Image 1 (cartoon, rainbow, N blue to C red):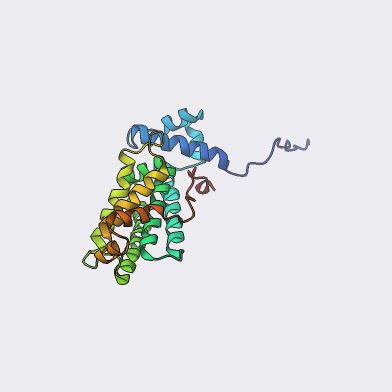
Image 2: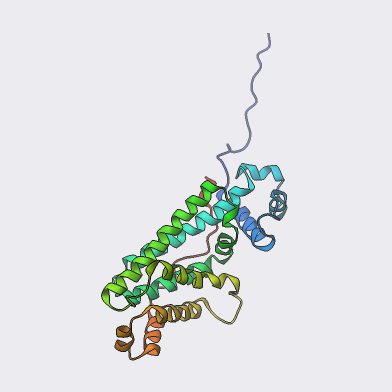
Length: 243
């Protein structure tokens, strides 16, 4: 009886998805979602854009929704990290609010594609995944509300402001930049951040704070000059979820 031997396998053993390749695929998916919309983008579109067979994508994800979820969730985690940094600053409330606004703008600009998709396409996620993302949103909004209350207690923010609605107005104003801002345009991210800081602070400060800064224009100049160490949010390519 002849003994049958198994042929030795050639090449390196497969260890799972390639994180660098996943970055490339995620970037392509995000660009397609932005250009065509989530509903109009197919798995085949994503595969074609990176030169893969459609079936090969399922080595990285289980469904098209996975791509959308990773784009939104992984990028949003950066915003929460930035917010934690702002809350830890040893500064007074006006400077903290200016730092919050600048951090938000730098983050949104650095992750413009993914953040725009988050605002446009969140409702396309399953209920469970929407809830997970929105939990992070509530944490972010709660941090902003804590800054507003801190300023009210210090007497530098208008005590008549209703913190809940005002926090939604501020984030809505900041998020609106995704509708019109282009990094190729005339306004730099730094100029954009300083302008927004002046606008937001001008809408929430108390008469006392305005007087202490020599008028509203003086306060806006102060807000625009606040430097919290510069932007740390870099363009994310979302490699973490491939593992």
